[in-house]
Structure formats: structure tokens, C-alpha cells
Image 1: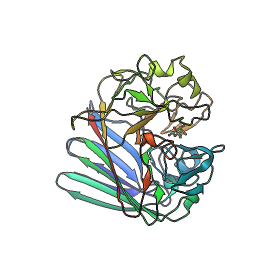
Image 2: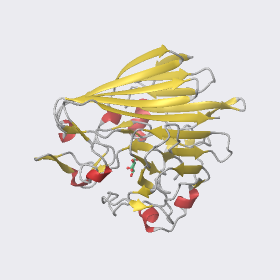
Image 3: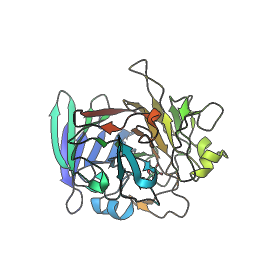
Amino acid sequence: MNIVESQFGEQAKLFTMINDNGMQLSVTDFGARIVHLNVPIAGTQRELILGFDSAEEYITKDHYIGATIGRVAGRIANASFNIGQTHYQVVKNENNNTLHGGPDSFEMQYWQSETSKSDGKLTTSFTHISPDHSNGFPGNLTVKVTYTLDNNNVWRVNYEANTDALTLFNPTNHVYFNLTGHPSRSVAEHLLSIDADHFAPLDDHNLTTGEARDVSQTTFDFRTAKKVNAAIMSSEPQSLLVGGGLDHPFLLNKVVDSDAVQARLVSPDQKVAINMQTTAPAVVVFTANFGDDYHVSMREEKLLNHGGITLETQVAPGAEKYHSFGDISLSENDTYHATTCFEIQF
Ligand code: GAL
């Protein structure tokens, strides 16, 4: 096992964790972001996620890919919310709303890094202090994101945070999987399963409405594995609304058995699969519905519409208003903890 450090553009660093089975996970301090996840298949490394070759490329092309997202992942309607009796107005960055914590949030920061190796485990941690009033959010917030890789081919993301004033906190990671190894291939033929009896429908501004809708007999029923294509080709209004595909929170069923897999993605050639488990109550699945006019090159290929799929574990967006989704407030007396594990089978 080993961690190799290298430059990632002008200022950023890249940390590549390599386990004894040849699985590699690279993360950068720019946005506490995941850049590579690759595994050896038939003698070559297969890349399993989307990413660019330098921090600068993320800035010019798409700064959310692979990044830590926060303070609040997803959309805050009208960029406003109440905590107790206090009303807050935060900065808008998508029409009238705040997306992913507003402009230049976690994904655009250079985080403090630290690496370690112990007990068959490689660790890279990133820490960032988001000052009081950042984009209008209250409290000095200290966030630590820890990535670990072990020899069971489990890659873990752990979040820890503290604040000095009551605030909102609902982070996620925005990694896009494409298990074919090619951003120029659609994820349509991947098999997806999600242990969720309900999903959260969206309105025509992509905002949740507070409704938790039964997935039975809908495009959103992934309780048994089916091709992602079923959602991409669906004529259901909820899929058409987001440009064909998914951009929706799935409300995960309560886990009874601690070994239970909550979401699973399998490559079209069946040679690689990802099993996800999380402490979060929801997963936002976005099938990279960028449209056919999207022209971004990635690793010498053209990034295709539906060229990736995210499993963004978090409390469902809208929770500041719809408390049935979960509590995203964080007080000065609490420490925030959340963990998501991805087991890679190859
Ligand atoms: C997702 C969001 C999408 C899109 C994307 C950013 O989390 O649900 O609508 O904004 O992030 O590329």
C-alpha cells in the first residue's frame, strides 16, 4: 500500500492511494475532490469515474465534478430559509435559488491536506474553515473530509464538522461514475439498484416539493436492478422534466442488516460493480443530463450527454423547509458525522 503525491496544475496537489490489489484512488486538495478511481481489469487499469487533468481544467469546464459539495448540497428555494426565528438570505447562483452552497463554495477552495497509513488502510484528509457569513450562511464552520482506501477494495468518505453558531449543513460528494472507462460512452447500459420505496419528485425549477412518492409502478422503481436506460428513455413527466433521466433524491429504506447494500451499479460488461452503503437518509441520482449541445472534452474524449451517473448521499434537498426529509441544522454543541462506503468488486 502506498500514497503518492504529485502536482495537479499550478497550485493543487494530487494524492494517489494505491492498495495491494492495484486499486487506485486519487484525490486533490482543490475542492477535496475525487479525480481518479481505477482498478486493474484484464491487465489494464480501468477508470471508473469522470475527471479532468488539472485544477485549472475543473475551473474552466465543470467545478462540481468529483468535488465535496457544501455547505448545503442541492437547491435552496429562493435562496432563503429560517433557522428557529431567524431568517437568512443567502447568495443565489442558479436563477432565484442557491445551488450547492452558492458560488465558489467548497468545490472551489484549496483545502488543507494530511495523509497517513495505518492498519492496512490509506487515508487522505482535507480540512476547510468556511468563515461566518460565507455566501450568507451563519457560523464559522470547520469541515473535515476523510477518504480512506483499504485492501478489501472499500473506499470510504467520512465527514466531520463543527460550527460556532447554529447553521445549516448538508454536504455530499459529486463523483460521477462511468464503469465503461469512457466519458464518451453513455451510462444507459449500466445496471442500477437502489433500496428506496420512495423518491422525491421535483417541480419545474428542479426543486423538491416535500412529497415522498411511492416508486411502485414508476420509472423510479430500482428496488430490483434495471438498466439506467429505463429512466433515460422514460416518458414519465418526472424524467422528461430533467431532460430525460434522473436528477432526483431517492429516500433510502431504513437499514436493518448492517451489511445490506443500499445502492449498486454494475458495468455493462459485468466486470466491475460498486456497492454503496451510507449513514445518509437519501441519495441524489443524477444521470448527467447535460443535453446534446454540451461540448466538454475530458481525458481526450468528448463527455457525452448521460456520460456519468452520481450517487450523492445526503439529506434530500429542501430539508431546510421540509423537515420530514431530515434535520440539516448543526448547532455549536454538536459535531456532524456522516459516512459513505463504496465497495468496488472487480
Ligand atoms: C446535481 C444537481 C443537478 C446539477 C448538478 C451540477 O446535484 O441535482 O441538477 O445541477 O448537480 O452539475
